[in-house]
Length: 175
Ligand code: GDP
Ligand code: MG
Image (cartoon, rainbow, N blue to C red; front, side, top):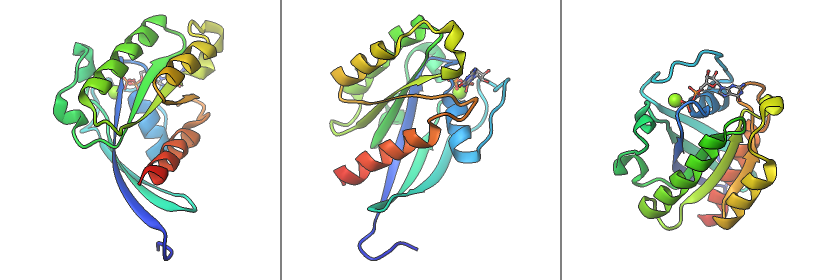
């Protein structure tokens, strides 16, 4: 039950990022608390909902995951349409995915709504020995674009709830 004065915010959230960076894994970890070492690349219809309660608001996320279309390095405009928030994901063990994250950000700026809340996610932080992208590089890119920045691991659960919590807080502030 929402408390009096507690806003209810329904927000479409989309995920972008190269294939294999862990988008589906992040969503499954957040929504179901699950992780699979052999996540099927094109699994599922890719629509999930999850509710997150903050003191100031209750946020109902409608989460749109890709079904592998990112393989073609682009996503249909209807995928972004109406989105209030977007998460751009790269893999800390792959500089290529970081370079591509810059492209995804540009695409969002072009196609997304002007008030879009954006987060840059450096996933697979458990692969520290194989790190190719320094934390500072991610921080800088996020700052240049006014994005939330966080390093996560869908595998070990590190910072997954924090990611969605930060987005929810920004949504509540903006609404
Ligand atoms: P997507 O193509 O971006 O949706 O990526 P997936 O969620 O399908 O993940 C691709 C592969 O990376 C799968 O084998 C996952 O098990 C693995 N993976 C996803 N997140 C992590 C993580 O945080 N750490 C590690 N080590 N592997 C991950
Ligand atoms: Mg996927």
